[in-house]
Amino acid sequence: MKRTKCYTYFRIVGNFNPEIITTLLCLNPYKFCKIGDTRKNGTKYDFANWDFGYCDKYDIDVDNQMRTTINPLLAKVDILNEIRKKYDVDFYLEIVPTIFSDDILPCLSPSLDVMKFCCDTQTNIDIDLYLEK
Image (cartoon, rainbow, N blue to C red):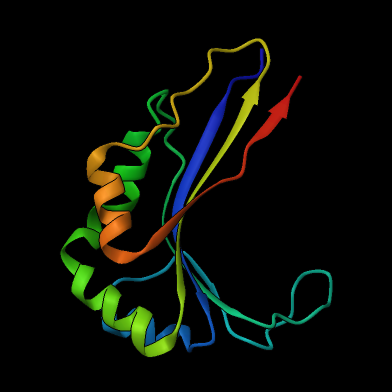
């Protein structure tokens, strides 16, 4: 039987140099791209992104994964806000569940702590939901 799964990560998107973000936050992304980098399909990125805190340790209460992702960022709210203002970027807390129809459904509700972080940093919560049979 196929099982429901989910991963989460924090993403910065905009017109910036990802290496500067890494230096300012003193955190290493798991993935990044620069404007002009080539995608697998041969097209060029017209934006930069910096992806951090990838967590694929599925928990039926996905809030636990969200917390794992943002935990290293909680002490960096001021730096994140400086980055957002200086580089005119957008922040996203990405939640990507794949749900199988015959499995138990996960709880995708963020806790007040997660929502506070998102409000304090103007981070969007983006849920990309996939359904499988």
